[in-house]
Structure formats: C-alpha cells, structure tokens
Image (tube, rainbow, N blue to C red; front, side, top):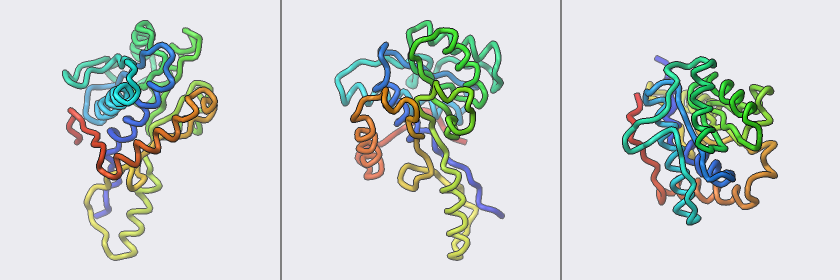
Length: 223
C-alpha cells in the first residue's frame, strides 16, 4: 500500500495568508468565500480569519474579515467548485462590503473572483489556493497578492526518504510549516506594495508556530 500524500495544510498556511492580507489591506476589510461547506474548504477559511485576528492583536489595528464566521461556522459559499455566476456573485458580495483582498477556496472559483475584481477596479488583490497561481495561471498574475501552497514536493521527498530508509508506512502525510509541507508563495508583483517589514513578521510567525509558541486551531474537522 502506498503512503497517502494527504496534507492537512489549511490552517497554518492560510493563517499566514490572513495576516498578509490584513497587512496589505487599505480598506480595513478582507474577505473569503468557499465552494462548499466541507472541512477541506472551511479549514482554509478558519486559518485565514485567525490570521487576520492575529494581525489585529499584534498591531492594535482592527481589520475585519467578512465571508466567514469561525465561531458559528457560517459564511458565503457558491454551492460548487465551478467558475461562473454563483462564484462571481459571492465575490461581489464581499467587494460590496469594501473587502480589498479576497481568498476564494474551491479550485476554479478564483477565476470568477478575478472577474469581479477587474469589474470593480482599484487595487483589490486575490489570494490563490493549492499552488502558486502566479506560476500556473498567467491570466490573473497581476491580481495575486500571494497563494497558499501545498508542498507536494516535500510530501514526495518524505515518501522517497522513508522508503529508502525502510520506514515506509501508510500513515497520512501531514504537511506543516515545520516540514515545509505547506507555506505561502512569494508576493511577486505585489512585493513593492506590501509593508517593508512584512516578510520579517511572517518569518517570526512561522518560527513561533514551529516552536509551539503559537498554536493555530480550527473549528472544522478534517476528513
């Protein structure tokens, strides 16, 4: 039996993305919405909201996250994972609340969010999911603040290394910041638009999470 390359990645990497979104925001509002209300989606949203809250605690600011309430586990969903009217409408509902950073969680729905952002104009930013979308979809690269990334390469290396050492098991691979199984992508075209010290702040957060001094939790239950 092969070792599953399943990653419970959402909480830690979207925590960083939420913090970065709050640091970038000019309106003081950021937003997230999902394709379906299932743990693989809401885990992302939990982490994002917590990252925004942590930014507020660390800086004394009051950036608001709309589209998801972690405590009540209620929020904005499109009902599926396809780009289209429902996804664009969901994105627009957050933009109408002055959100200037959007994290759409659910595959291609980010493309509809990009359409809504372009219709609005201004400096509203998009956050990609799963891979560095700046590298995988040139049509939206100019909108991308960053992406939350699954380190599939780290997972494959873990399997290969374990196999070579005779330690191969069928236990799920759990991607963390510590084993570099998760993370966020570079800011790319937005590098000059984020606060100059944001990289250092994020490095400090990663160090605290890895050391166990900062625990990222979730209301959602992964499956």
